[in-house]
Length: 218
Length: 233
Image: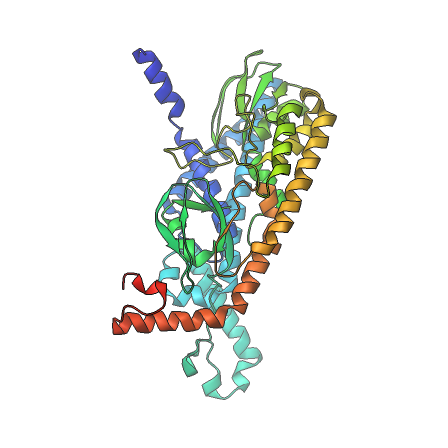
């Protein structure tokens, strides 16, 4: 095999950074859509993607005046892809907002969950919660005895703040051979995961594996 | 603005995901290479085969600018042998193995291009086959036969999904190797619901077990009749 063959092979295996970002965003979207709790905000990835989206939109705006039929068709392809990308980003963000809405107070009080939100999500959750508090207070809470007015009471050892059900069943696919058997807490179950295996199991058992990137939700 | 959908991809979202699969096209028109957000698109030069994402291939096909070369498994002989195999075992036929040494997974594997293996169904087999049959049936040999075999396969596999409900359990993992994307989307609500329901029924038993384990961890007691006790404490 001469050097050109080797280079060609390396080239064919190298994935362009834009494609890699698309793959990462797609995986983040599927995982966020499927996992019962919110996942860490992919800071760098979203920055790169939003920047690329912005540049592509500029390109479309520049070329819209072009009346050459060939350029016109290229523009159709570019716009179709742009719309697909925007759908991915939007659906990803909306899935996160749905989770924040469902358990806003939990996302603000639990430190590890709070750290997973992006700055604007944090701002949204704070505004959402304070609006809700103000509304509840003016409509009925103010009529209650003072001791019953709190929204985050932990009296009696039970917290009023509800979190997501982390034991919900998820479909997960192993991306690597997971070295240690996955142990399901509270049961006798421990199982091995080999690359390509698909299992249905509770989220809390595979959370670590998924977050380490050794498995993905489907 | 929050997404009003239940957790887990719905069938239309699964189809969207499937449109990122690569397929092989034979262009009928020239097209310069393009820099898209998801990476570069190679220039199209008839009659050279070019791999393209399915959404773009369908766009070109609808405008009669290209023909799609169907993947080898989407042909009557392949589907026939897979169907025979499916009928002979209670589990799904073995899926296309994922390539080692990477973490790439469907839809970003070349499982629907013209040089995909002919003897195994890829993850997005159902959606992909349906979309190609709908938009490019003139490029597929014996489309009616393929359609019929796809339907048979789907029915055999759906029966297996239903039969598999018997082994669902709340605490254990359930292996579903070989399941397809659309089959997951369709079965998720039911299977997830059963597993969650069974878990809730067994929750008090589990809770007392967890408490006992925590207690043993505190007291540092090993041994006993339970075989979980040899776990590292």
